[in-house]
Image 1 (cartoon, chains in turn brown, green):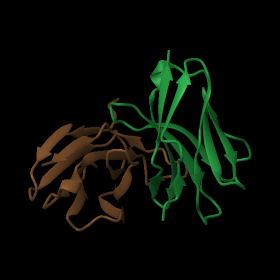
Image 2 (cartoon, chains in turn blue, green):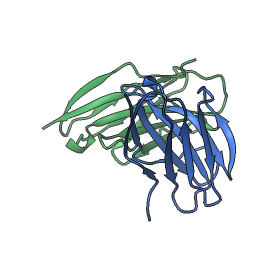
Image 3 (cartoon, chains in turn yellow, cyan):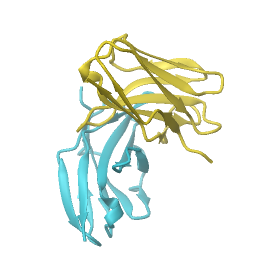
Image 4 (cartoon, one colour):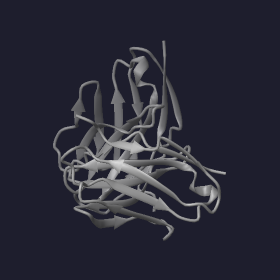
Length: 115
Length: 112
């Protein structure tokens, strides 16, 4: 079975542009979470979606938005890119909302560089 | 507020030896879960081990074990019989409502 897949793997944008990152969860998983990992730091929570509804949002500006589709795949959009948005964006899926054992299954991420 | 502290930015270990990675946490919840993830250079976060706050025994998963000291709020990861493939970043995380809060990570380099 395929794991969590993310596209694209790498992306280069310039300041002020907009970007869309895509994620397909493991088959049967209904929850998708997005994390931002800046170089040298641990991942920071951005969003969680479950059954196409937003369940939680981290401390990120409104330039960041996301949605989940009927097939449970998800998109993360970032508008008006800043240099500080350069990071590895990780998508993770779980069977339901994050359960007690927290078994999130992560993809390999999208490396976004903003020039 | 930072909930997870990993004080070791980098560690070297000889192949076949054991290594302990430190993690301390801060939470006011009586029930919580602690996790360790491995991140190789490929970028993917790989789940290693889980410890529940009410679990009576320390968690073990193959060569990974967790030294859980609840009163000290520490959850150190022990990797036994290190292998070259263990070279990676290791992150400690705590379940905070519906999300994981990660520490800054520790880089482990295994030497042959």
